[in-house]
Length: 112
Image 1 (cartoon, rainbow, N blue to C red):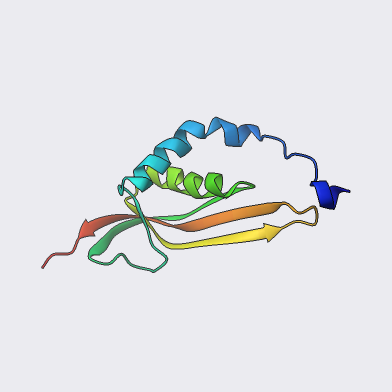
Image 2: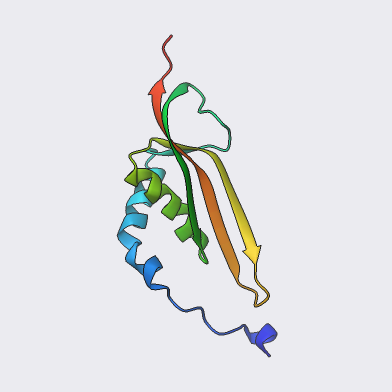
């Protein structure tokens, strides 16, 4: 019957509910255009001044994984995330587990 009516509700994970303010700030920065995400290795019209390294965020909720990644970039004072990738794992119970990752970088304008 679980397939027809769905399985039991997922528990609310404490670590995901603690980060609501960080996720909301990251969401506002992203939607306001303050932090950029690209799937390429460079940002058009900008040079990379420094790289902070690979950042990863995982969650059962996609928005938490995506905005958690942005929150990590904000924590290290990055301007952008380059080489962004995402992955979804499917568990036998039907749950999806999202992974978002990329490289946090600081940008500078290209000199002409």
